[in-house]
Length: 380
Image 1: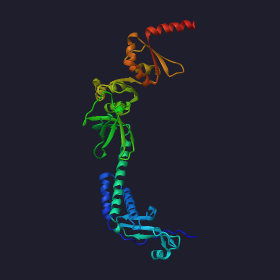
Image 2: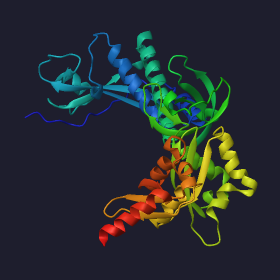
Image 3: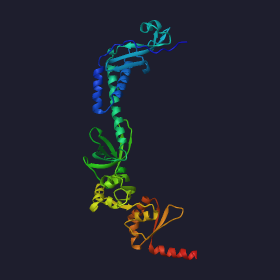
Image 4: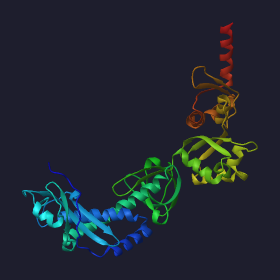
């Protein structure tokens, strides 16, 4: 039975460019952050492909039959062939007599490593190697950019408007700094209604998600996401950044109004006052960034009734009654506060419901009193 022996590599013609190659790769690592080991692997792959495509017999030799040695001492290559009694495939096999000129102990079924003169590579092979290396550099750069922006998902970034698609209305934004600059897409659906931008304008965006794509990471950003409000307040409010005030929830209708529930994590801190800031400066800066969007800041409470009461501000609330077995409540407000509690086109009540997670049924006191009286008479 034929046995497989480890291929013994004889001395192959050396190309004394190892030192120059590694100096170039170390410089590349400094400039672009691409690891030397990664590029050595890409170079080996490039040379393997070059040899496979530039053979005189035009045979596509399997990659595993080509061994490339690349170090600072030099560059060499071997082709692995199987030792046979009767030659049937010149590209992959070698007669036993010829094999013993390389390895005197070679037996049928063994493999031997045959030196390759890489100095004979032609122009096509060189181009192939160059293309693979360039592709490797691009892939490494895209990989690094993807990792960089994956870490920035759900963060606030400042960018510059590059161009606006006249058909879709999508805005392409240049984000990042220096070598980490990249283009992001602010789709029309993620833009605040009524906002307009021109090329060169600076814009703050919230990074929604990052996807891998053929030409590099695809970064989707938003101006309408509720967390944009959260990140803006983190910038303006030291108490939030330091964890003394916690943003519990945000309900938002971008460009019109937002409600934000906050709580203090330590005694002696007014969470609403911290977010509003001296003379309203902190909330004013956020409102200005959002081009006039109104922001209601309320205190979060573990008591659902108290939380709903606060969420309906600026309207006054007389009473909040939870509906048994449901995440719903009935709210009674003074008659003159009904329109304020509901808000324009129901916006205040709608945002309060989204903020608290409770379905809210609002009634004026004049209607609530007869209903309560009727319920009491029915019980009697």
